[in-house]
Amino acid sequence: MLLVVGVYIVAGNLVNGVGKGSVGLAKGSVPGAYKTLVQKWGNLCPAINPALLAAQLYQESGWDPDVVSHADARGIAQFIPSTWATHGVDGDGDGDRDIWDPNDAIPSAASYDCELAKYVKDVPGDTTNNMLAAYNAGAYRVIKAGGVPAITETQNYVTRIRSLEKSFAAPVSRVDPSKQAAGAIYYAQKKLGTPYLWGGEGTAADGGRFDCSGLTQAAYDSVGISLPRVANDQYNAGPHPARDELLPGDLVFFSDDLTNSRAIRHVGIYVGGGYMIDAPRTGAVIRFDPIDTPDYFGATRVTEDGAKALPTAV
Image (cartoon, rainbow, N blue to C red; front, side, top):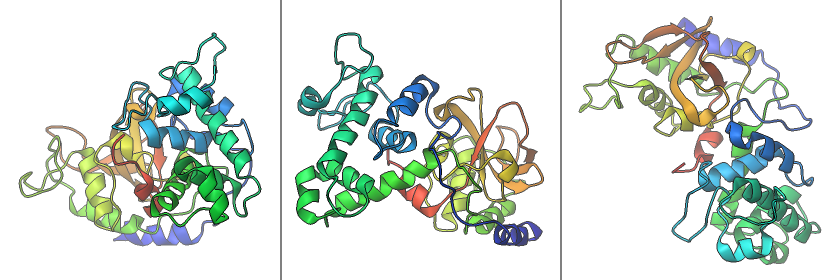
């Protein structure tokens, strides 16, 4: 219970608000193969930034350059062929426009965003929100509505991308504390000593046992936040505090590839003092473990909006 009380004491002493400034990408949030492209083309026009562009690509494809949707949207940026024919660009200057090549598709996504921003530049309200609405519903509907139209799908899309944007942006000041952290820790504390089970979610069929991401998912579910099932998807459920800014309740992640969040293989719940509660491996029990190891990847401060914004399949 001391840990739980400590969450609120520390949280109350933090400065609220997110700082302003140029937008960088959070550590490892964009796979290394695409980071330079996203950072460059995310600054193509004032309506977008690298974190926003990353959020769109993640939402559309989960960084899979070979994915095809049921609507025949193709590649990492999920262009349908007819839209690509009009808006695809030769991003790498090799003489062709290849819908499957991220070197063309990522610049094309940024270029398309900026074109839409021009179409809606005179519409009242936030230009980026209007651009995203135009991406989802078409520029005409945004212009006709005088802003984001009253279409549930479109409104949800705008909210989702703006929330995901925060999880891809490198914070420029301290990240606001999580309101649900104490409850998540309390849940995890009650599971100390429980044997590990690969794939375990704590159900009766699992004998109440967990694996690492099953434990973190259940801990946050106990406070009303639904996280994805696997660790690398949980990484995008909120902004990313630096190591010296960690608070109890933050999720901490581990990977053998420190440049790519999609390679994350382990997660725990930070409890303070350099320790986490985690379900480490087969043959072990849920326990306290140190986080300062060579494979420490980074942390996420889970937010309700961030979790809701995550795509259902990535």
